[in-house]
Image (cartoon, rainbow, N blue to C red; front, side, top):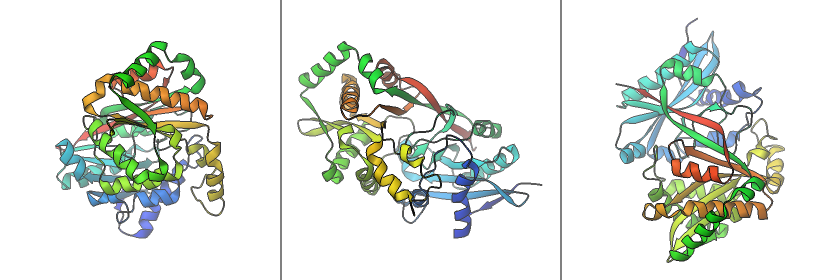
Length: 376
C-alpha cells in the first residue's frame, strides 16, 4: 500500500510523534533514552524560546495504517539572517527500513520548506546546531555521550536514497585521562604557560552560584568566537537563560573554565558530566516513579565528561589558547576522578582543533553527517 503522510494537527498526533522515538529504538543496543519530559519541552512551540524566531511542522508516515516514520521541517529566521541564506532544516527523523516511507517523509519536509520560500534543506538538526544534530554514520558499537545522537545504521542509506548529499561531517573524539596525561607534550605545557604570562590572561573556573552572569560572559565569547563556523546561529538572551538553568542542574564547575584578560572574557571551555551514564538506567525516559532517584543519586558517580564547547574570541584565536583549556581540562579530570571522555562535535575541516586533540592522545571514534538537499 502507498505511504500516507499526515501533518500533526492535534495533541494526540504530537504524542504519537514523540513516542515513536522510543518505539523504533526500544531494541537498539546502544541507544540511550532521552527524558520524555525534555523531548516534550524541546518541541513545545509555546515553551521553547527557539520558536520565537522559528517555525516547525511535524509529519507522521503511515504504512498499512500503521505508524512507520516521522520527520520535522524547521525554519530558523535567526539562522537565515546571520548566515545570509534561505536554508531550511529537517530533523527528528525516525523511520522503518523502507525507502518509500523515507522518501515520502523527506518530500513532505521539502515541500513545506519550499512553501516557506526556502531554497535548501539541511539536516538533521534537532532543531539547530545549538542542540543535537548530525546523523551517525560510523561508530554504532558504543553508546552516545550527553546530547549526541545515536541513529539506526540504515538511516544514512535512506537519507541518501532520497537524494540528500553530504554537507559536512562532524567528529567525536574519545580519550582516557591516563593516555591524555602521558601524551601532553612538555613543549605544549611550556608554550601554554608562556601564553598566559605574555598576554596577561587568567584562567578560572566558572561560578555556578552566579551562573546567570557567568553564562552571559560565555555567550559574549561564543557569539564572537563561533561566528565564522559553518552552521552557526547565535543564542538569544532567553535561550541563554534556559541554558543557564539547565547547566546549574548538572554542571561540575571544576570542569568549566573561563579565560579573562584585563577583567574581560576572551575564551571558555565547557565540559559536562556524561549524564548518559545515568540515563541508560532510565530506559523509558520517565523520571517517575523511580527515575528521579536514579538521576539524583547517580550524578556523583559519573566517570566521564563531554568537552561540549570551546571558544576563543577572534582577536586572539591564533595564540593557542585552546591548548591551555585542554591541558587544564585534562589535569582537573585526573584530579577529580574522571577517567576520560569525549570531545565533540568538531567540524571535519577544523584542522587546527583536530590537530590539538590528536596530539593529546585522542582518536576519532564516531562520525556524524549533516546533509544538504536543493529545493530549487
